[in-house]
Image 1 (cartoon, helix red, strand yellow):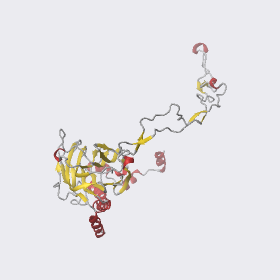
Image 2 (tube, helix red, strand yellow):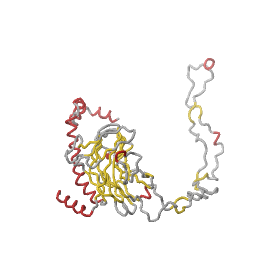
Image 3 (cartoon, helix red, strand yellow):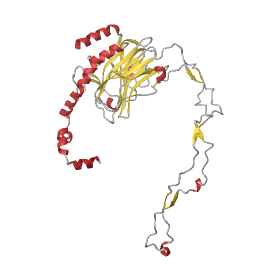
Image 4 (cartoon, helix red, strand yellow):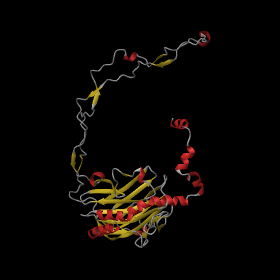
Length: 397
């Protein structure tokens, strides 16, 4: 199997143009750490984390401090372009200290020439921003942002992560941008979103609403109206909402002189039907939902490729609440099949073995007091909790 994978990689590698590939086996030799003005910066390191199936193979770029900003960049091995070509960005992210309160970005930015590594920060221009953005379990999605003439365009509908996607294991994120204006995003090599750039981002569209067009004053957009032939029944409004309780009787010890005249308590009237409304019928005058006329968009450039960039660098610019996020296997190429093959080679084996190693690590490293409360296995727990059938039925109720 390993020989087959190597053979496939050789085949893809011959055709693929690789602009950047990093597994951090040489540490941070390619990278320059930046410092944002006025920000408290965190320290980067190269580690494999607390638990890993292969400490050497899984070493990656790690954020080591809580509540810090992080900045780091690297020049591409060769200039990358999406002009007339496919562009693929891929990276693995392991959020080791993931928990409900975790907040932090894990996205990478593709950068233009001229970016200053020493001061790289959130205000610097970028071409593409891609990767996970997590905050607890409610705000968790994959960011994919494109720059269009200086404006950063967010995706109209977020690429949401499922509950089962959000954990402390290593995950692989892949973006495939095509010159025909389509895209696809993969999570762990499975398609998560795809479509057209012009439909899913705020790029100029060929046609737009005519700003001079307005809805006519006599436009009828009510689909249903009151039935003019439906009349309120005679005496309808005379029916009271409440009536004296017909089943109530005056107490034997009631004294009219001392207690006053006895009155039965009021109860809801079963004959009362509320405020009367005429029946609804379809409106014969309905003209449909009004929409403004369409006109050619003066800002739309016919035949111009969207998200067409010449890029020279990439980098991370992040705010991290919990340390322990590890970035690895960063790839920028023009070949999606090469990226998938690299994912199968570098990420898949780690993903398969990681959970088992993590469970073993937890067992060996959890504090003794935690083990006393949670160390009982399921079988022991079931034996202690066995009760007569009657008790089980009570619990179900």
